[in-house]
Image (cartoon, rainbow, N blue to C red; front, side, top):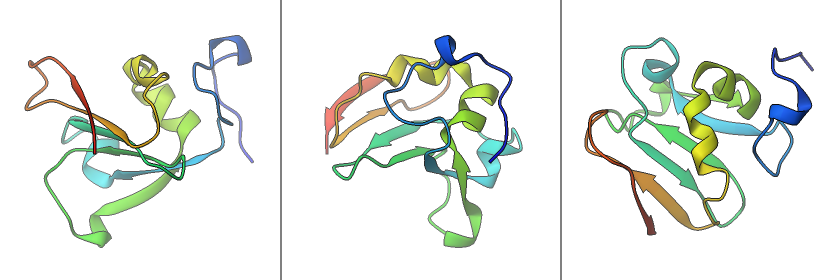
Length: 99
Protein backbone atom coordinates (compact mmCIF):
# COMPACT_ATOMS: atom_id res chain seq x y z
CA UNK A 1 0.00 0.00 0.00
CA UNK A 2 1.25 3.50 -0.73
CA UNK A 3 0.65 6.94 0.73
CA UNK A 4 -1.21 9.89 -0.70
CA UNK A 5 -0.44 13.55 -0.11
CA UNK A 6 -3.94 14.53 1.08
CA UNK A 7 -5.07 14.16 4.66
CA UNK A 8 -7.78 11.77 5.76
CA UNK A 9 -10.12 14.73 6.44
CA UNK A 10 -9.75 15.75 2.78
CA UNK A 11 -10.86 12.37 1.43
CA UNK A 12 -14.39 12.95 0.03
CA UNK A 13 -15.54 9.44 -0.88
CA UNK A 14 -17.29 6.88 1.29
CA UNK A 15 -14.83 4.14 0.37
CA UNK A 16 -11.18 3.44 0.98
CA UNK A 17 -8.70 5.66 -0.82
CA UNK A 18 -7.03 2.42 -1.93
CA UNK A 19 -10.20 1.16 -3.67
CA UNK A 20 -9.51 0.47 -7.33
CA UNK A 21 -11.05 2.29 -10.27
CA UNK A 22 -10.80 1.93 -14.03
CA UNK A 23 -9.44 4.77 -16.13
CA UNK A 24 -7.45 5.06 -19.34
CA UNK A 25 -3.78 5.65 -19.89
CA UNK A 26 -4.82 8.75 -21.86
CA UNK A 27 -6.46 10.25 -18.78
CA UNK A 28 -3.51 9.45 -16.55
CA UNK A 29 -0.88 10.81 -18.93
CA UNK A 30 -2.88 14.02 -19.43
CA UNK A 31 -3.70 13.50 -23.12
CA UNK A 32 -7.47 13.32 -22.61
CA UNK A 33 -9.91 14.72 -20.04
CA UNK A 34 -12.28 12.70 -17.92
CA UNK A 35 -15.63 12.89 -19.71
CA UNK A 36 -17.54 10.08 -17.98
CA UNK A 37 -17.65 9.01 -14.34
CA UNK A 38 -19.51 5.78 -13.61
CA UNK A 39 -20.44 4.44 -10.19
CA UNK A 40 -21.77 0.99 -11.00
CA UNK A 41 -24.21 -1.17 -9.06
CA UNK A 42 -21.33 -3.18 -7.55
CA UNK A 43 -19.84 0.02 -6.05
CA UNK A 44 -17.00 0.14 -8.60
CA UNK A 45 -15.87 3.36 -10.29
CA UNK A 46 -14.79 4.20 -13.82
CA UNK A 47 -13.33 7.57 -14.83
CA UNK A 48 -13.07 7.55 -18.59
CA UNK A 49 -12.13 9.76 -21.53
CA UNK A 50 -14.61 8.09 -23.92
CA UNK A 51 -12.04 7.76 -26.71
CA UNK A 52 -11.22 4.07 -26.48
CA UNK A 53 -12.83 0.73 -25.76
CA UNK A 54 -9.57 -1.17 -26.17
CA UNK A 55 -8.83 -3.05 -22.92
CA UNK A 56 -5.12 -2.43 -23.47
CA UNK A 57 -5.76 1.32 -23.13
CA UNK A 58 -7.46 0.91 -19.76
CA UNK A 59 -5.78 0.60 -16.41
CA UNK A 60 -6.60 0.05 -12.76
CA UNK A 61 -5.64 2.82 -10.38
CA UNK A 62 -6.48 3.50 -6.77
CA UNK A 63 -9.12 6.14 -6.16
CA UNK A 64 -6.69 8.09 -3.98
CA UNK A 65 -4.20 8.47 -6.82
CA UNK A 66 -6.78 9.62 -9.34
CA UNK A 67 -8.23 12.03 -6.74
CA UNK A 68 -4.75 13.49 -6.18
CA UNK A 69 -4.32 14.08 -9.91
CA UNK A 70 -7.91 15.23 -10.53
CA UNK A 71 -9.33 16.68 -7.28
CA UNK A 72 -12.45 17.91 -9.13
CA UNK A 73 -13.78 14.34 -8.96
CA UNK A 74 -14.75 15.08 -5.36
CA UNK A 75 -17.94 16.53 -6.82
CA UNK A 76 -19.03 12.95 -7.57
CA UNK A 77 -18.77 11.72 -3.98
CA UNK A 78 -22.57 11.56 -3.82
CA UNK A 79 -23.06 9.89 -7.22
CA UNK A 80 -25.39 6.97 -6.44
CA UNK A 81 -24.68 3.43 -7.49
CA UNK A 82 -25.90 2.70 -11.04
CA UNK A 83 -25.42 6.35 -12.07
CA UNK A 84 -23.05 8.13 -14.36
CA UNK A 85 -21.96 11.71 -14.79
CA UNK A 86 -20.96 12.76 -18.27
CA UNK A 87 -20.10 15.74 -20.43
CA UNK A 88 -19.36 16.21 -24.11
CA UNK A 89 -16.15 18.20 -23.51
CA UNK A 90 -14.18 19.87 -20.73
CA UNK A 91 -16.03 23.12 -21.39
CA UNK A 92 -19.49 21.58 -21.00
CA UNK A 93 -21.47 21.10 -17.79
CA UNK A 94 -21.72 17.69 -16.15
CA UNK A 95 -25.03 15.82 -16.42
CA UNK A 96 -26.07 12.87 -14.29
CA UNK A 97 -28.24 9.95 -15.25
CA UNK A 98 -29.05 6.41 -14.26
CA UNK A 99 -27.56 3.83 -16.59
